[in-house]
Image (cartoon, rainbow, N blue to C red; front, side, top):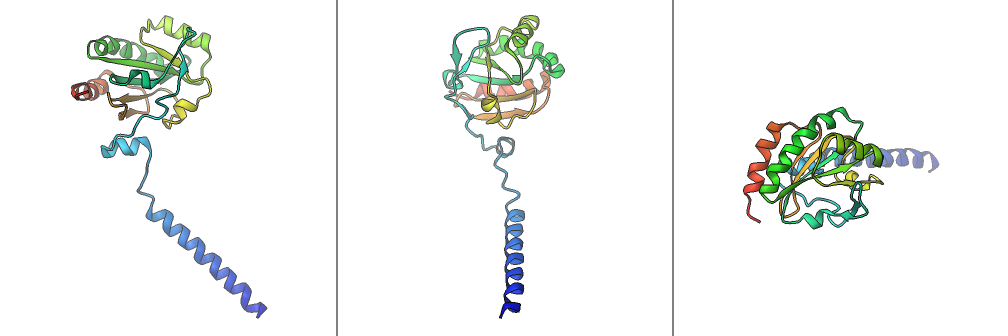
Length: 184
């Protein structure tokens, strides 16, 4: 009886592993990440809508919920990031356009200290609001692992476009007009 128990346990364990592997392979295509959802046209709600983060250089705080009804271009950056420095003038130009269309850029500092971020904002002549993600939890909820990353959030608070690397004028010009044309 004992000789039979060990092979039965090995076969049961192997069958269990095989079933787990089959389940994993069968469900591999159902990626629920923000990027995959946006690519499918299934626009997810922006995470952390109610999370209030400190405004850089201020005692105030701001949340995405306060910007509901506006198109928001959420840009995650750090002062030490060369691609972030390259895209800052593009975002600043776009801010002037967005203000005319009930939208805004919202910068979010990530993996950066306040004084360096403040210097960056001054040197780049940034006029759009910038908040600090001190813990990193806010941007990690967006799946952010590096900088720069940009998310376009529509007036209903849904992410409609994602750029996981440096943006350019062309990407903004392809993305924003359609989002701005959507009704409130």
